[in-house]
Image (cartoon, rainbow, N blue to C red):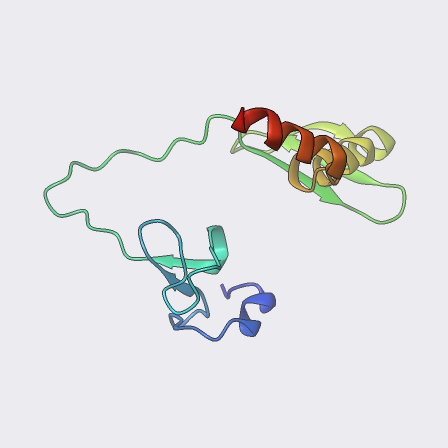
Length: 119
């Protein structure tokens, strides 16, 4: 396991896997304007005196892109296949364009909303 290569552009402390060392707010100490999470972050945790809880991911899915017109979508830890081919590709496209990387906001609407919230 190693951190995503993009983290190499951040001049900050890392663990041996290349993950950026972060504070409890997931802020990179040396560059406080950058936050890191997931596989790119090394967060020191203090579990002393705290009872352990089993990890439970309520809605675990994977969606693997298989090229220009194919994909596979699975659900659960046992990876039950739910969608394949064009239907899975459509789901992958939705995940990438709406869930993870939503469309850019309309600047005029954003500024109008900001002014409304200050009133």
